[in-house]
Image (cartoon, rainbow, N blue to C red; front, side, top):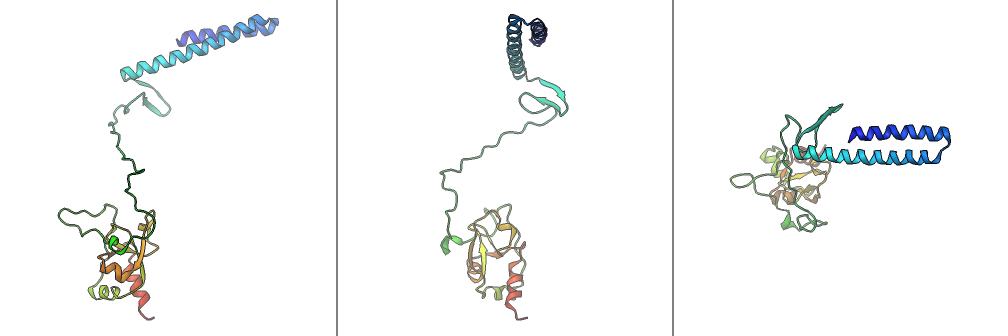
Length: 196
C-alpha cells in the first residue's frame, strides 16, 4: 500500500506541473484526484499495518525514543497490571465539611495485633512523663485529623491536604492523641507556656 501511495503522489506531482505549465484545468483536477487517492491509500495501509501489529503483537521499528509496542509492555519490560480504583463520587467515604463532634475525634487504637497505623502517619514525639503531664493541663489549641492518632501544630506539613479539627491540647491528650514527631507540638507548647 505504501508503494502504491508513493507512485500516486509522484503521478499527482507530474500532473500538477504539467497542468500549471500548460494551463490545463483537466490535468490540475486529475492531479488533485490522484493526491486524494494517495492519501486514502496511505490511511488504509496504515490501518492495515496497525491491525496486523495488534494481532501478532509485533513491535514497531525503533525510533529515536527506542522500541515501542502497539499494545502491551516493551521488550524486556515486565507487564504492569492495571489498578482498580473504586469510584469516590456518591459513596459517602469522605468526611463532611465542618468540625466533627468530640466523640468522633478519637484516634485509632495504638498499633498491635489486628490494628495498623496508616503507612503515612508520622512517629509519635518522645516526651518525658512529667512534661506530658504539663502538656495535658494546657488549653492551647492543636490540630487533629479524624481517625489519625497524632496531634499537630498548625504549621505541620503532615496536615497538608487534610481536614484538621482544632481542639485544646488537654482535650486531645484526654481523647488519646499523641504528639507528632515531625512538628514536635509538645516541645513548642511547653516552651510557650514556661516563663522567659
